[in-house]
Length: 438
Image 1: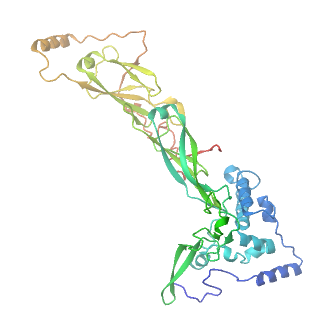
Image 2 (image 1 turned 30 degrees about the horizontal axis):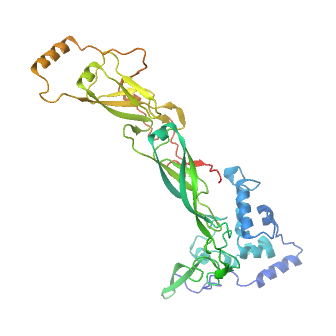
Image 3 (image 1 turned 90 degrees about the horizontal axis):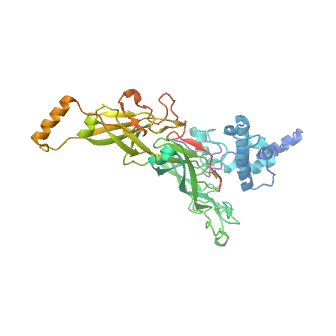
């Protein structure tokens, strides 16, 4: 609850002082005391001329974030200097704050010279908390996530996969201005939204935020003939880009790659980040768990007793020849191991998990054997089953008895003793990827 008892509180959300008389007095006092007003420092930090327009300042900010003395800490910059860059951008990208700075310097801003160029919520933040918590520097659009399907063969071998992404981008034809001869909307003061106060009772008001109906949320007004023919005055256009994703061997299901600044953007709002989530399709033969592979093989009773010798096509296109050792028999539902023939370990593609084969023994149908055949089997089994003979000139993958020690417990496909590869603040263990410019 609040009442109109706060000094200087007007419902037009002007905030602070209402005219320049007090600032003129401050400037006059500074001149009389012999102090020069520095109005060049912020331009030097941004690396722009005093005549630079908003778009030039925006471009200079993006450039300064990547390289130079005031670059982003992720690029090896000093956090304190990067903070100064953000503060400079906040002032110079705001026409009203910039005007105050050009006339009275930083001192004018410190003494309340933000004027009506601040957030329409400033007055509420001051009285009800949140003051001083606003973000410095340009706002950033929300991150977006898209999914792309890949095959298990792709994940086994690794590949560069292309993902088409539809997004909103600033219109290049009008440089995000919407056209020419635009004037700031006199209803929302360029804020794009208006605040409505509704009286709920004695000395009690509620507020609601609405898109400005005069400028339709654009923040400015212009004649129809002056509107950009490409974006029709909307300042943004639909855009589609092919994002190249470096699919690594052994990448886990639902792993996300991060592409900085490749999502939506808008005028004076930095492009959001794009996350590409890897979705691995089910395979008709192989099942994957971490870095291990599983298959199921049906064999006859004769093969179970005398040994197996068969071939399968592996995920890399090669042919695996699989056999039991002479004298080895196979029980129904038993699992056998082929060492090192599983998936590549994620981030360690030269090492592999294991391949596990589960055997299903097909018994003869009921009453399919004649009495004389049964007697012959009894006689043969009593004397021992003759082992199958393998061609020693061929390379075989011999089946080992199953052991839990052969399992790779890491569900992400990395080595069992490796630490979790998740990155803080990134969904699905996302990895940053530098995207090539088109």
